[in-house]
Image (tube, rainbow, N blue to C red; front, side, top):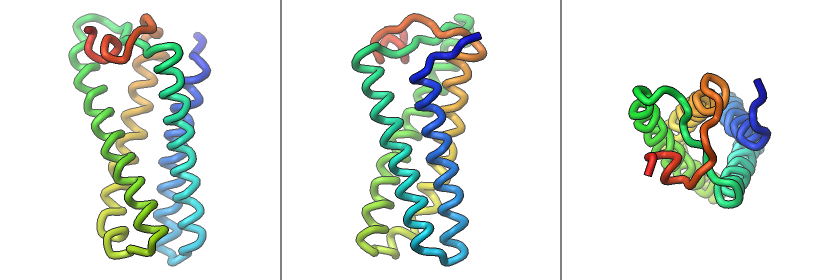
Length: 153
C-alpha cells in the first residue's frame, strides 16, 4: 500500500498543530507565558502550512473522491461536511486567539481559548479519519473538483 505524499504531509501538519496546541495549553496552565506563546505560534504555522499544501493541491491537482462502498458514501459525506465545519470554525477561532493573545486582550483570549482548542483537537481527529478513509482503509478514488469530491456533483 502506498499513500500520496502531499495528503500525508498535510495530515501530519494538522496533527502536529494539535499537539502544539495541547502542549501550549499545558504550558499556560503552568504560567509559562512565553513558552505558551511560542507553542501556539508553532501551532498556527503548522496549520497555515497545512492550508497552503491543501489549497495548492486542490487548485492544481484536485481533490480525492471517496472510493469506499456506495452504501457508506452518505455517511462519509456527512462526516466530511462536519469536519469541514469544524476546521473552518477552528481556523477562525485560532486566528482570533492569536490576535487576542498578541494584543494582550486576555479576557477574550482566556474565555474562548479552551473552546477553540477543543474544536481544533476534534478537527485534527476528524482530519485523520478523513485521511484514513480516503487513502488507507479504501484506496483513493478519482481526483476531481472539490464539489464533486465532497458531494458527488
